[in-house]
Image (cartoon, rainbow, N blue to C red; front, side, top):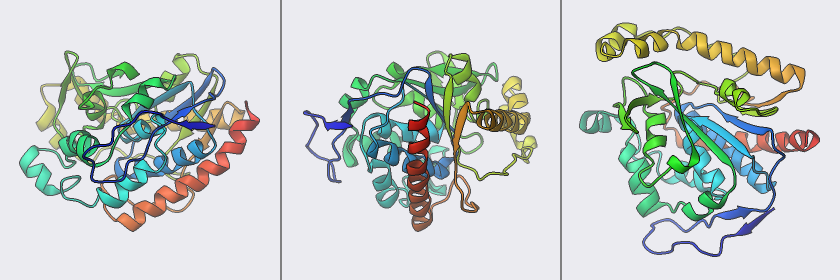
Length: 307
């Protein structure tokens, strides 16, 4: 199970400190947690993580893109309930998400607020436990020059969260990010469900957390004219965006085939889901989080059966 971290930073945070808890046990080698993005729909995954924390379950390998990677930060740091507080207290604020950000900072999401102000001043993030948790954490972002996914490891998560911010930078409504000599954007563009990378890295059983209902199929991008206008300097990125629906549907089919053959477990919303990735309805997002928790509880027993 989990044990309390001895050291944590009190000081100036506006919200009560949620102490990180160290994981005493780890699932066997070969178990992977694969995380889809989805903007604020990703708070379904955050609920799943709370169920996993209640069960003391940590994975030796976690891979995520966009919101999946961002929400996994609190899971790896053992801070049960931290993401729910994020929904309750911060998602509804204009600094978090709103058109004012788009006008002032060229981004619908306020990334400086999300990745600097919140963890540094408002809602404590336990860096110590994150570093001590012995899991491989892989974060994907699309390399705008190549149109392919650039992968980064846990040690790249540093103050400011630039690598996670790059993975979350949604095309059209967010600026590109410069990181490690690359121009990067949302990892969900090129690897929306990063199952293929997890297989390539040698994992044998995959717990795949999706943020869409069963039966969902991605449609072609509607705004290719705007895309070509904005990103004409990056033709390979434009081509990857044009093919995004093909990539998503291919990766989704692979996940479902693996689940049918016993090589994967899919955890996803069961209730009809109509919200978009920029949803700000707090009660709706809290219900989605709590549905994630319920689905996570159901998944725990199935995970243990496969250990």
